[in-house]
Length: 458
Image 1 (cartoon, rainbow, N blue to C red):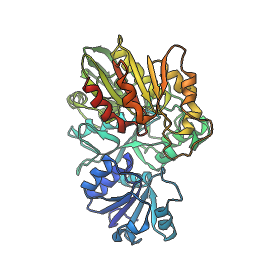
Image 2 (cartoon, rainbow, N blue to C red):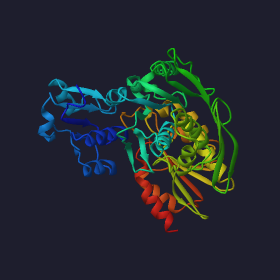
Image 3 (cartoon, rainbow, N blue to C red):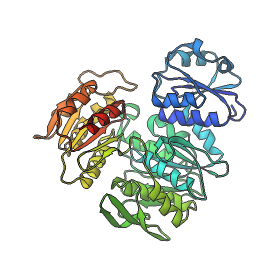
């Protein structure tokens, strides 16, 4: 089906962060856009206000008439939706063209130069940084992001003239195999999604296959020392990067007074005194990767400096809600042991002499089963841990797999407790909070406004 000639697009799972960028894209193209999502959210309400027709019950009779013509309608689904979903079953039985989100992204990017960011973690912040660097420069870009950019208040950027499309390349369900990158960053390959891949070896093989999709004339920018043997085609350059070494790296790092400045070193030049708009140390490495992609695609040194300084970050990625002399509260999407470790270490660096408390909501039963000891090790770097129940997402419970497993493996002496998410605000009311962070990719973020309100009243 030709994306230009279809008249309507129906999304099964319209409210996901990745799906919603495509909803916005098709609305911008003047298509009739409709869809189903399980629950209303701030994001689905925004999509409705922008023109999408969204409902929240599995019911074929609620599908708009315009989306019932299989010759002019494209169905887009997210892998998070169960295969037996009533509406999906109807579309399948009646011969509609059904594509995964990643297939549609792949089709869109084949006609442009795809600048893709892949990796177990860091990809949302890095890809949003890349998009901002290009968008505010003379180069411009279209971008499909995996988070809401705080600079633009959206996860979709559009350019009528730029040949570049920035994409967060998602390894879940091998989705990134549908892409045809012109250039790609790979940030990390720590094993994840073992419910899909089974083994660490299969996970790494998936990344190797992904590197083979980079187009000749393009390049791979790979974090130094990750477990990945790239299988790039002839004519694809391979660069390394990291915080301190590699073809692209930082030197003369200065951290103090809530600010970070670095010198950015490339194979052919040096850009001095780059200020990080979001001054946490994890963003030094993310910034090096983003600046590398921007530099290789013609963004000037001055544009890189102004873009890095004006970058405001991504919702739920090291997202400060309160920041004053008495109390600090932030929310973070970290949901893998390595991400949590980096997040906690970044906070420790900023607040060396303060007590740091985290509320952690594990995401998925399988991930908790596979990594509960690693989660406990990372969380043990904190002073206090409050654990809530596992967020199931697409999964059914697994007997014996609960937050208690992580609780039991935390280091001796740490302050720790288990709590129902509905009780979080009341539990926190009685605690001495200096620095507080919510961690997790589930619905823990729904409780952030109430926590913020309670802490502000202190």
